[in-house]
Image (cartoon, rainbow over all chains, first blue to last red; front, side, top):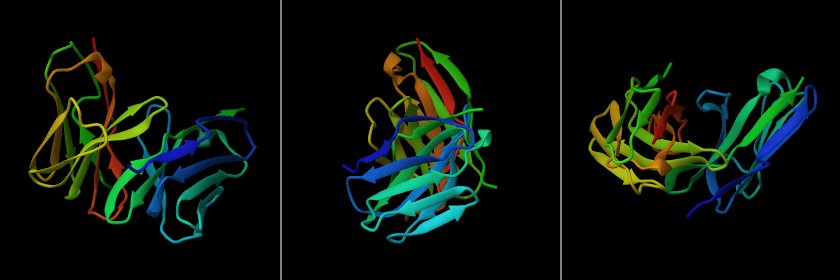
Length: 111
Length: 113
């Protein structure tokens, strides 16, 4: 079955440093979504990428979808304490739109 | 805003008990899901439903069953709870098929002792 791997599992950064999490699928995806889960909270949708090579930005967050539609990344510039949480990618296959979630990257910020 | 409500936030059950986790969504979504979340394993799909009375197994259905008698309600059932089912359970819904955005409930923390 489809597998979605995400690295790193944990990331500790100083406030103001950049952060990147990477997502890799074993199969070509129809689209990929990113979610954020704050400590003690539930995952909340951030963005969806559909096109090969697509890049989308949300303020300090930059999302990329690979040319082969098998990998994706989320980059946060100049992290802030509000960025703390676990970031999940979730991929959907063609013809089977069930989302498969990655294992998540837990981001902690050192003030 | 979409609201997905899970009936219980925290539960403690004994091994062998039958456990019901209830979930209701208020946006007339067709699809509903049950995930469990464990450290280092991410979110794993247990069951999902794309219509009333329809259900499909996810990646880890063993030990679980589901019921969807009404469009807005999706129940997860643990027929005989075991300690390895101690976990956080997340209910979710989405508008329709096609990789649509998933909206999650607050989660239910289940401890089986």
